[in-house]
Length: 270
Image 1: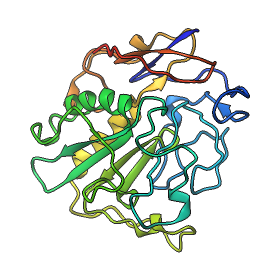
Image 2: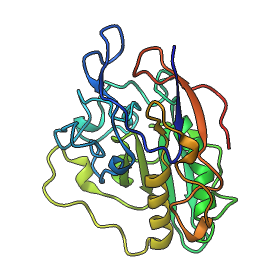
Image 3: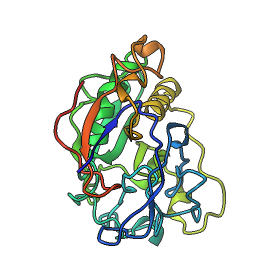
Image 4: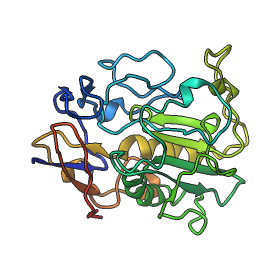
């Protein structure tokens, strides 16, 4: 079983493969997604490379360009359109999800009443939070109220992040950044009747910009075979530059039961 790595600041890439017939999502394409393709929009179903055409909204029947599965918002919301509630990828607590079950972690501003949340698999959030807190330390993060240890995502919880609060999707809709108090009602329409609701004027723009840039630069990707993830980015000035990492890439070793299947091991190197 070949060993691959998932790391922050990895450039990703590698060949696109077809998932074999004895694996989940057999026949779909997987892999090939690169760092410059991780940004999506506020639409669930965005953040896919051009080689993975999408219907515009939703993630049904799509390939896995970054190997990680799209977010599953679950049935606990009790409202919203069908495209947000597909059971194709299981519930948020599905332990078969690459990187582990879905979790969330808060990023709270110390200078304004702003609370952001990252929603993704456990490995992704665990690797990202220390990088965000380091890079954005000069942008008013409340360290005490922004724990590095994530909490399980519970779609029925009244205070949990919601799809209408998403300000940005990343990595083929497998990662979301949400903002408390933001209500993008277009996300709750199967067919949008207008543009996304603008980001509120009261948002801490400097902190949002730093978080967004850091996730784009550092969200963990599966390393292309033969790449050296430790050389992806090194050193830097932290909070003065949201595109750097504290010292080197955070790395998790990955065995593949098939060429595409991500089974993450314990052992984060920080």
